[in-house]
Image (cartoon, rainbow, N blue to C red; front, side, top):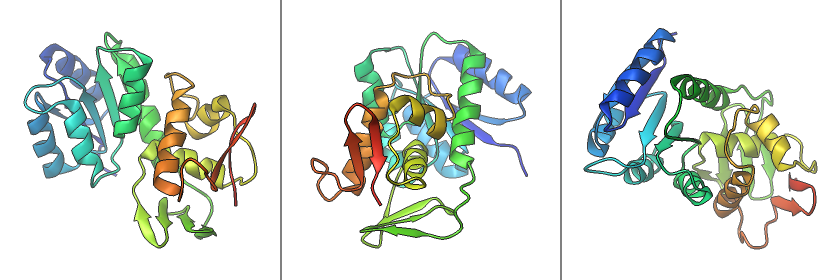
Length: 227
């Protein structure tokens, strides 16, 4: 198996050079873009295994890049930003980012986050055949979801949360349990950001997200998937 390819998109050269050096020591193949358009061009040419994307970049912002990529790709995205408010975290998740790192950061923190997100996106699911849940069909082996026979595009983190709950329908999961079981305990964001992932899943999966039939809120306990 070849080296994992990481695309670093940030206009601060000192950041990309430091991260590149650390990543190459970990045996990753690293590509660098210093503006949003270049990030899209490189992404299209080589399709990385993971994208580290700065929110504030010239030509195209990280937000614009993320939205364009999410139209056709589920490649994991880690957002870098100098903003650390909960509102910015939620915004990044809603755009389709799988995780979030606030500047300034330690390079080893980024490496650990990259490994964790790649691990989540590559996790093997042991169910060998698709299961139908009303209008939803989940193929656990291929990690695909269909609603009314139409493919549903999920980010790796959304997919991991859904699969974790769908493998145990009727079991409530607290936010902390979803972080532990679905996200391998490696998620460093606000636990309330789980609510944002659930909101996004409902938007994509529910006939009426305000009256969900698949992902229920269990008051005082968390969330559960209904079979």
